[in-house]
Length: 218
Image (cartoon, rainbow, N blue to C red; front, side, top):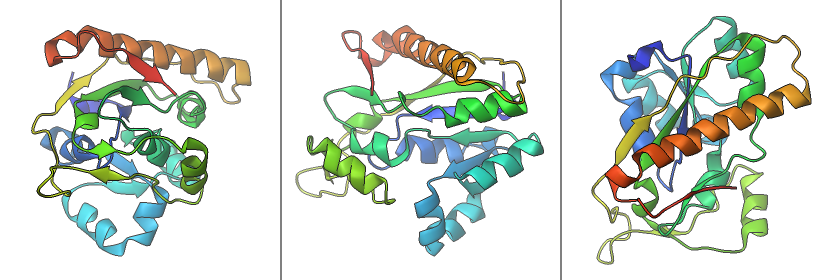
């Protein structure tokens, strides 16, 4: 299956710098896919917005953009965990911020979109990220402030420590179209997505040197 045929590609984890996401954004197979970036980053960084428009199809990850694109049936890609997922990134653990991220599932049900999980192995190893003080850092996230404290190579903190990334694509999850899904229905299909994501991780982890690892759902 070609990536351009996916209705909604859900990419995890972003790590600190979203390098895997940037690779996907620039792949020729993804030319017809609209990538939804953090609203704060998209609107408050004019240079970033201009740069992404020269090499792909970017939009802000806000409600209006979602509805506008889904009404047209446009293929999309998102990182549901956003700044919160970047905040909890650890070079020692595989983590995704998903427990309370259900909005993308609700929209998928309302507009008849299929969901396809995508996982990026070793993204979390590119930079060290100071751990702890989660409540305060997630509070900063709520204001659109990425509360990450990263550093890379010892001789240049901005350069990533790891030179390998492995991107894997999961099974397409086809959901029914439900105009007004209940909380129970959203929770049910959200759990289906989470289950497939974990299974995707488990299917590929040995091939990418993570055989003894588990995927933490935050």
